[in-house]
Amino acid sequence: MPWIDKDKCTGCGVCVKECPVSAIILEEGKAEIDMDKCIRCGKCHDVCPQQAVRHDSEKIPLEVEENLNKTKKLMENFKTEEEKKHFLKE
Ligand code: SF4
Ligand code: SF4
Image (tube, rainbow, N blue to C red; front, side):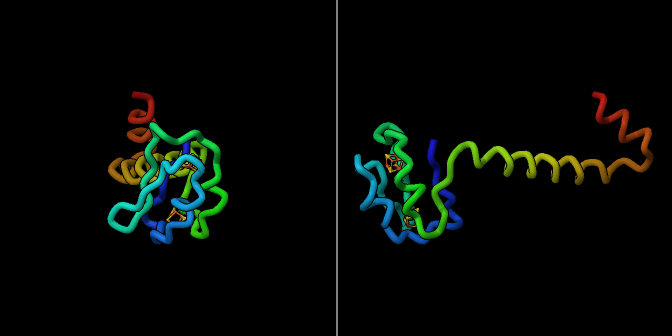
């Protein structure tokens, strides 16, 4: 499933023009996909000059990295290795 990385989208409108089923509109200068219309053809992903159109599968490594960072931050609250092990077991 495609999604727009709003931080990268510049609102150039290329994907809006290229979408074969007019599933993309610009809202407040950012592309927005109507998932009810989208046929998952991947065209928007291929044409975006900013690589702002991403696939769900690309989210997984980002989510893993985010979870790792959260866990690392949380582990800073424990002083000993024993406390850390105990926390991870729960
Ligand atoms: S082509 Fe990319 S940068 Fe341009 S509007 Fe679409 S998502 Fe945004
Ligand atoms: S995947 Fe295809 S149908 Fe869906 S928004 Fe992108 S260009 Fe349009």
